[in-house]
Length: 568
Image (cartoon, rainbow, N blue to C red; front, side, top):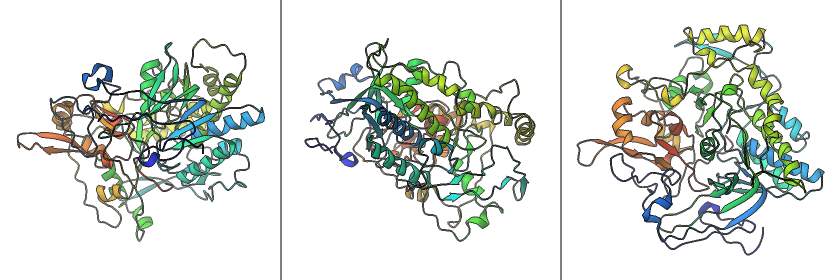
């Protein structure tokens, strides 16, 4: 703690060394919509468009508003306090301490506390922990429950087909641990702080900053308030590490700025309810209600009967694998963890690869940021060595070996064809086939028109095993301050009704696992409008991924808002 620092509003009320905010008495122009207001779809002005899409300097409503931001500087800035970001921070400070170098490492995390936005299965492979913190057991890491048995099944409507778990298959969990990943992240945060990492939960990085030569300069935290508008802060660095997790808001900007996805396939996703892939084609499908129906399967229900529901959450996850990895380095920054997408899909595990990528990033960065005679062609340091190290690492080998398993299920024989392929080419040949299968394209483009699909009649929840959506969302602890700029923004307010509702029967109201989107009648009674209940948002980002028009642009809300997962 450093004295003479200014307290920030709401959940961000904590001291930050040498940081302060620049306040203005101006109210925020109504380019934004407060969360408690209703966003409607019409030909009205673009009230829900974010300033990264419609720049403020081109909007006369911002004239005269004080836009100065306070700036601070570090050697390395890390965006995102998940396993990847924390591993990078820990490894950087380990190296600095080993070489007796001064190194300021700052990590910003949008959740109110470390682990509050972390949601995972999670069956953890401890290989990265063994390397990063060899004495993790003695230090009290919350890995207490080793896996004792694997059961893998294909569920028919009423029955179960057991699948043998052969040695060497990626689904074999011998040696792994069942954990609550939020607790693991919280523990990792404590280890990082002990080493001297500056961790700032409750601060959402909303904007990438650039030098005049186009290299990354750092990040800015988001503006807050509408009635009382406050500018965010700038944090500059020699190198900025982006570890936002799946489908990061800033990573989307970087992909476009540096054309990082030019030589890879589109990323594909699943939603973390029951691993329902987001590449489904029927717009009437609801991942949440599929999850509720699945719990009533005769093989599943006995495990849940008599239990008490205590929490709920949802999160998108990357499933594109090897084919969908973008370029990960660019002048001034790099991507780690689930942001570029290092999840091993057949294993349904990404924590160990995310951690390893963060460690590799730290080892690539450290010699450059501490060099006394470094000459850089750009103001922001470019670290291509990270990409080279990644391709020589266990991550690359692991993802290459399983690269064809997920796309093999997109064949004429479906599930069974994919299983046969996996048995032959992975279990026998260990993924050494000389070809690489392709995915089917963006998940957003897989939906068929509603007229070509059959509505799905889901059973009503019984309140014992299956539940309604809103009571589930209530258990996520989700909350957002009402007086803030909208974080669920639209590129064009007319698209939801004119295209999504007209062609796809409004899939937003079904693919969102938090009841954020609903179509309601206009007050005049002669049409419909899209209502956005942003207060419910659990930050899963499914809407940004699955919107068939790619019109929804998810951006970070004020720091500290969102779900409050208690170690999920």
